[in-house]
Length: 141
Image (cartoon, rainbow, N blue to C red):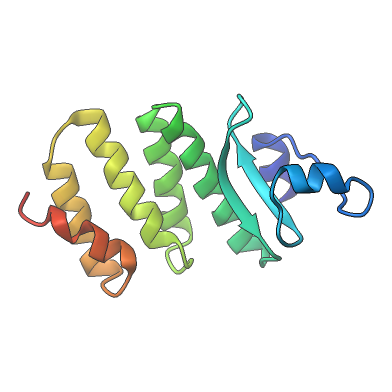
């Protein structure tokens, strides 16, 4: 996990008692609060509270997908999202990663079939998820 973090992020530690104004500036409600930010300093993903190592890596990877998506680098976003759901298929947010990977594929191609394929994947692998419900509008698009 340390290698993943050091190779993908620039970690910055802000202690609530030592730097309360900075803590407030980022709207942290609980510790730890991890923010995945774009190189421009825009928050793209927020993680609040402790997580087991695998869940934390999956959350951070999801955040990297969101950073790439915000940059409109849809191929990179899809790759990051795919990593999440292929590596951590039982992760709570794997369905979210499938959804956004599909949106990324669509944004890259403007091919509505990519959304329909994503809807099928969601209803097959994550039928009860909110992401399957969100993707349901893509059925037979």
